[in-house]
Each structure stands twice: as C-alpha cells, then as structure tokens.
Image (cartoon, rainbow, N blue to C red):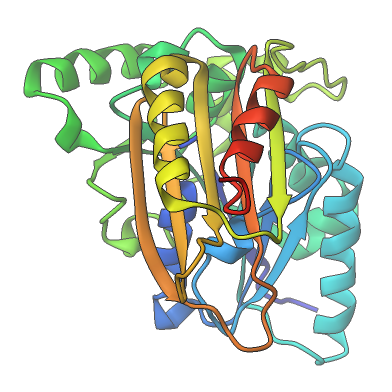
Length: 327
C-alpha cells in the first residue's frame, strides 16, 4: 500500500533561544491543527506546556531527562502509541512537531527516524529547525551541544536580532556559516517568521549532514552533557511577595546573570488575580501578567533555573525569602 509518510518537524536550539515561542507560532497556523506536539524538558517537571497556547493539538511531554539520552526509548514508545491510535482512526495526525530541550543533541532524534524500521516506514523528517539566540549564542558556541544543534539544522533562525548591531550580526553569520554552510538562514525578533519557511519544505537531506561530521550519525551515542550545567525546580502553593520577588530576581540577573543560561516560570503573587509569567536568558529578563487563575486551577508557583555551577542551597534560600507569609 502506497501512503504518504507523516512529516516530522524537529525544533531545537540552545537554552532560551525561543523554541517555545516558535512552537506557539506554528500552532497558530490553521493548516497544522492536526499536529501531535512532543515537548521535552530537562528536569523532573516541565512548565513549557503551561507556556504553550491552548490548541486542539495533542501535546505530550517527556520529562526526567534529555530526549537525546535516557528518554529516547520514551520517544519511540510515544510515537508508536500515536501510530496505533492513528491506524485505528481514533486520532488524525498530519504532522508531528518535536521540541527538544535546550541541552539536546538532535542527532539521536534524527537517527530515530532513520534507523528504527517502524519509525522509518511511517514518518519522514521534513526539517530540523534550530533557533539561535543572536545576543548570547557566541557565549555558548564552544559547548558541544550548541555546535551539534547548529550542525544538524536545515534551517537556522537567528532570533533576537534586534539586540545586536549589523556588524555583530555579520560576524555571527560568518561564524555560523563556518559550522553549517548548508542551512537556510532566517532572521527574526520574537520568532516572527513566515511559518511556510519551515513547514512542508522537505529540506532534510542526510547527505548534507554527513558532509559536516559523519561521526555524529553513528549508532554508538557518545554525547555527554556539560557536567557544569545543572537545573533546579522550585514549586510552592504559598503566595509570593511581589516586592521580594523583584528584589530576588534583580539580584539573580545582576549578580548571577552570566551563569544563568535559562530561567522561566509561573508565579502565584499575593493579592493578584492573574498569573505572572517570566522568562530570562542571562541578564535579559521579561515578566508580565498573564491570564486570570481559573476557579478549579491550583494556584502554584513553578520556577525552573538552568545554568552553570548553580548553588542549590543559595537558590532555595532566595526562593523561600520570597514567600509572602514571611514579613
């Protein structure tokens, strides 16, 4: 039986580049309303699903590890389950979108759809799209993971270009082209791009990837994360004091900013009817009021901090300081 394979779009990029923002833009496109979305988050608790807009898509999370390492079996299991439901006509899927964690090497994810017989027979990679934080990528470019994400991209989105000048952008482009001369380059602020530039473009060509580094697609997966990078997650149902939160974040951004690769979360602020959502990369921080808490929704603060050589005890004390009950 001849049938069209289900296209796969892989979204990757180093921590804080803007992958979830891009995912939301894709999901706003009506032509992708039957997409299955697989979101992988580094750590035991994912908050990305809370930052993803409400859609009709099937959104599945993979936690407790990086998709390129110990949860790759979970990825195959999830896709196999989706296939069974698809074959039984319980769901309709016209695309799968995989958003990897910022610490993931995309090579084993790509390998899943090339080496596994079941996956290869039902799915085909449409594109591998890497989002780059134009302001900070050069600080991380010598990290193996960041290099791998650039090397395997069909499309490179230079995001946050408004934060650098033309000379800096030209230098960045030259550096990136030296790593991957084959990828299409797009430039954006807040990932505002034409989605047609990355969806249904059939740009994945294994030959181009093998020209860069043939070792990266070998069966034996030797990738290891930088041991200096760690992540901490804090949750609490107690309301937080806004003034104290502002002081704590001001300290983190100004004193610890260079060590904080990525920090994001949803805050339950005392005497506020709305959730407060924040995201940050190094010393760039953004926080805003979000929608109102729903009546049946647990008011819960969730904070994720990912960085280099972070001190857990110090961060715990800072978070505890912010609890409104402490005067």
